[in-house]
Amino acid sequence: MRKPFTLIELLVVIAIIAILASMLLPALNQARARARQTDCLSSLKMLGFVFHTYMDSYDGFLPAVATDGGLVTWRDRLAISCGINETDGDARAVRMAASGFYCKANSALHPKKGKIMNYGMNDRVAWYQTQFAKSSQFKYPSKLCLASDGSYSDVGWNSWYNNHVNETSLHLFTIHGTGNSAQILYLDGHAAATMRGDIPGNRKTPFWWGKDEE
Image (cartoon, rainbow, N blue to C red; front, top):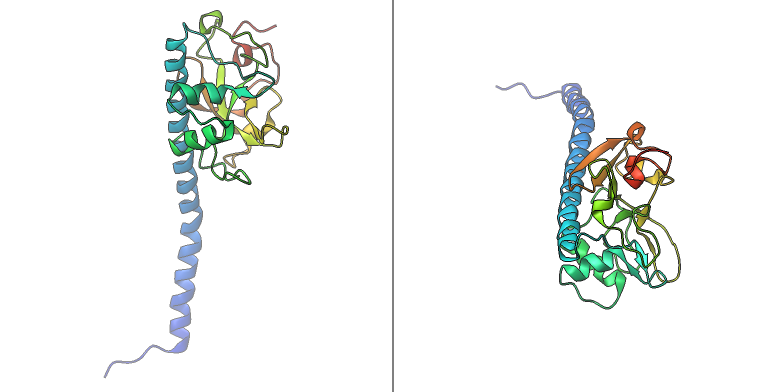
């Protein structure tokens, strides 16, 4: 005759399983977070390819962050260069997100359009103006931030998404939940997780304007 489990023995087994699960859960969460970071880094590298394809088509010029009173943004110009021709800027950004230009670690969604391209371009490279910066004018392309994970913000009636970053953009460090690093795409096309201490708070540095520090 087999001796059946007692209630105490069953409770001990359940307790052991619960302890093991609680020990494994942080490791699983860390692995999940690393996977999201890797995925976002891959998306940034793809974005770098699109930027360089755009520059090849326009004699080395970068898209301006925004022109035409803010109605035509850098992401509009990249989307159109990719063959996305919706007339609405947010609709283009939705299509770009569906094509893979989307950071999954950034969980915020557009209130009406859902998943939307969530990257910001460095506005110290080319701000609201008709002037388009040429990539060759920057002395340190491997140090110059071109774009990064962005954040969501109501920045005006014609744009719900904050699509630019600069030295005041502290949200860069919070998107992946680390608080001490950000995913950065550099002008030379490489992308990397960059520690907070390596991202200066001054505008006139190689990181933000691609020239010698002043």
